[in-house]
Length: 200
Ligand code: TYD
Image (cartoon, rainbow, N blue to C red; front, side, top):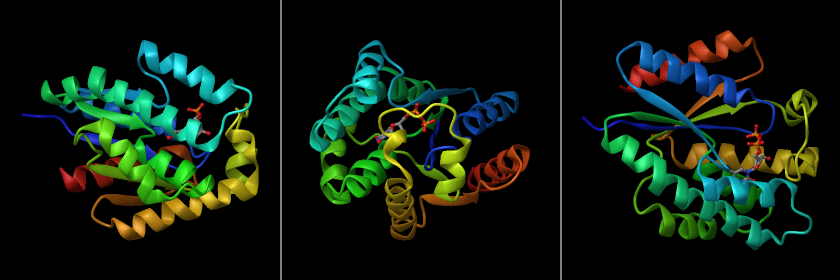
């Protein structure tokens, strides 16, 4: 049986990475082998692109969008698709939906254009469920430990990204599950696990 591809998404500071680890541990301990991947990164080529994206100097908005799409095409080909084919569930700390929200919305490149560019590299491997951890941008930014180049954009940018995530959730209600992240982490984890158990 093939595995499932689950995305954890949201603005900065929502606790995505920890939630992803806990969800994968829950799946594995209940007989569904799973891995966590993170974007940008997760492959040798992708980690190189990550360094450019997060710590590079001046990067044009479309250069940024294409680099995100490039690291993603590599990750999906090298890790995600083989794992799914082997029956392993893939929990991804950010996916193509981050590009739709950050580059499509935040950078105003347009959600549909960014979707098309990404679709070319993904060859049909697209998240089946997107768990959107929702949080006020001011709270998220205050929680963030070290800001990278994109994380340092400020609260107005984060707000635009958050609004785009919300618009995407409204456009794709079958795919999205919204989980409020302004509460204790174990409550967020429990809510996320419930959503996954309800679907599968
Ligand atoms: P990361 O260190 O992974 O932080 P986070 O814990 O917030 O996920 O940094 C990823 C940064 O890159 C974050 O600011 C979101 C941004 N990003 C995009 O702008 N577009 C994308 O497609 C992805 C995957 C991430």
